[in-house]
Image (tube, rainbow, N blue to C red; front, side):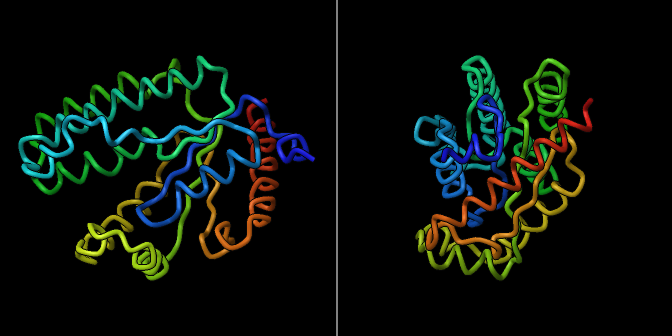
Length: 222
């Protein structure tokens, strides 16, 4: 039986996957989309005109990069809802301001003026009643030890060369961000509680939780 129908998940639901590097956002996105017969929405990195410039000069290009990400994610969110929903989204629009732009500002690679301009733009675009927020944000969480092990196992050269202190900082920033996040309902999943790569059937208990969670939040709205 179709798992979406079995657990009564709305056919037009929009579910966003969030979490730090290494938690398995893309794997979860694809697994849920396959099981629910939803479409996927992934970040378009290859067409980003600022990425190479940014890595060469953080101070000069961090503001440009964050504004570009904001514009692209906003357009994608609009497209998803105009399509009528039924999407699993890899990474949320909220992480850019709550984690990355804030980190650049605090580290001095984005000026206070640029940061305030970026936040004002984000608030005007996203933090309004007119912005189509997801029905659910699934936050994939785990200990820093588990996440470092996953990064090591997937063996991407750039990630292997990145200092462990960076991953520790990102882990802490994500935890701080999600603990105060309230723009849409949040379902937390610990990466130790399932293994979609090894056992595809482990996705069903997750979908059961998603269905139950969506129904509970709908009842609270009434």
